[in-house]
Length: 405
Ligand SMILES: Cc1cc2nc3c(=O)[nH]c(=O)nc-3n(C[C@H](O)[C@H](O)[C@H](O)COP(=O)(O)OP(=O)(O)OC[C@H]3O[C@@H](n4cnc5c(N)ncnc54)[C@H](O)[C@@H]3O)c2cc1C
Image (cartoon, rainbow, N blue to C red):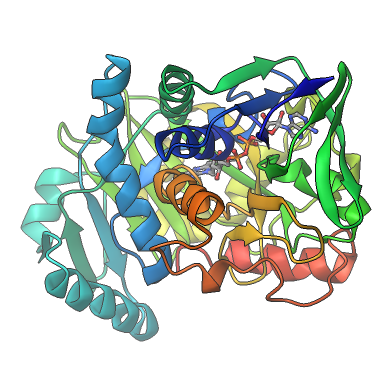
């Protein structure tokens, strides 16, 4: 029988970051098992937006670790990550969104984050396609940007290997072995691996592994999607990312064109038990459904992008993110079984927070506590839940709909 001290289940960005941080913090004999290839599920589909500050301070602490890590990973792996530091423009038009953006602005100032309010002239130079109400609040955060999430996942994996982690792809974990409430190993399609603890980082599939042991993770696979418009409109040479709270939408440059992400009024959710192992074979959006979704958002989007009707959309990407009812991650130890740790419930922000999530969980495992505030991410905070039920899916869908607000 094969042995490891700890098995990380899942080779997406959260599993790879956790494996890297565990090894960096001195944990030996770490084995990561991925049933397909690394970064082949959500972690290859993200728009890759990274923010230093948001309306969630506990998330910000995790995200800032990712920013710090970029140069650390480049140095360790010798590979560039090509982070695009274009900055982000946040836009608020309603009084409620202005109040929450002002709060972020004030906090940014106090925390030494570069921030400035910008005027119409600045906006028309940087985002010539963009329109906002005269009294809109527009704030620019210079140090933010976006990254290729596939590349970042691969960098965590390469660094983890260099620090001694064994990574095996093409191995499916069938279940976690538990004796008297304590982890003793994992069963795979290629035999049993004995271990004392596991990190469940199985993305949208995580409940398959935990629920048989009474650990219902309060999260639901929820659709996220974006479109890419061809570079046929003047989108600007130096355009930043743009986040529009009232429209529930974001944009970023994409090879001269425009990537447009839109929150849905009622996000599409899925019963995790029905997901195939290979998500690329799964219709997250039905044939033609991408146009229905864009039409549903048309009024909201054309308000800030008057040229929407003339844009030619040449790509569409739909994938799954696991959402929780409060939009916070699931990060920590399971109470029901000793030795089960979880990094899941990414709520569409797993790329930007990946550094802190891996760092925090590794600290919890190796030292029994973390420097990060993990209380908001407690696995048990909603009590008993039924993650596949319709009522619970609705709760998580509305967390997704509120995301950019
Ligand atoms: C369209 C879209 C846009 C997004 N945009 C952003 C963004 O701008 N910024 C941001 O921060 N985030 C964004 N996200 C979210 C981001 O992609 C996720 O938060 C992140 O990729 C989650 O990583 P993960 O490791 O939890 O999951 P995944 O990448 O899904 O990885 C889970 C892995 O576990 C494996 N696995 C599961 N079960 C088993 C098992 N039993 N045995 C072995 N392996 C198993 C799976 O094969 C999979 O590879 C976006 C997501 C989507 C879909």
